Length: 361
Image (cartoon, rainbow, N blue to C red):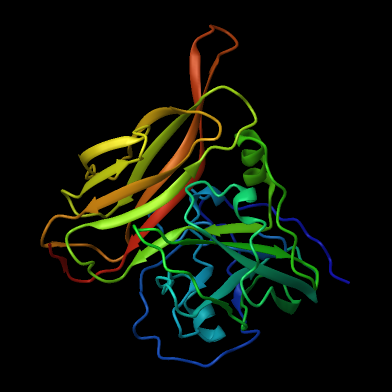
């Protein structure tokens, strides 16, 4: 009988986490790994028997599910990685772009929790959705799981790096205008596919889900590994506002980056103009830039982001840019009735570059 264990989530640096002992539980055909990226990443994401990482790179300071930056969901084109490579490259971001219209293998790796009992079992299912900036559960939970319906590892032991040998096989439909697919992994402890989380009625319930759910992790990442045609990297996603209230909500739409070339320009817009940022240069120090906008419940529009690196600039491997949606809640203090604001991150769309030559337009 499977033993259910809930875990404390790691949200910041994991230097206090015991160093897990690698173990290969299953394998597929080995392959040469000399072409894999070699930049480090830091461990930390949610789990029941497993820890799945929440952030992919050391330059990401926060660790929250809403960053949608788990490197333990590993798309890798048509070439599956053997378990030893997934484990050996555990501290590296090794995901490749999804090839639209083709069969892509997507593999899962994780660290087992220190609290699990021997012979515990972990079962994971994987779903996809066209890119959404906020991954509300009702937007993806009813999607048919990617084949196979779930993958399972039996006889787990504590504090081990594990890799699921059976890959998911995903054939993404072709998407235009810079759209891509987000991936969502849900884990459980039974032999049947895990049940996805319940729908939420508003952002408060979503924050409660983010803070307390230990089964789900998000991968909303576009790896850019080739110099795109032209001088622009186009990205598209959707922003939906789910709320059972009637009042407009104050959103902060922001962009944060690390190691993007000095002089990189971005442009951001929606069809209605509710979100609009004309040509704006990214701050060299990586500080965020953004705008406040009031959005009504039911808002649902495409967001277009254009990234213009300067001609001839060399983009450092694993430079990244993150488009984020946060809600801002203003309330008076108890003592002086002075308004204060709390900001809650709800979702992110991430772009990771691994182009080792100048960006030419």
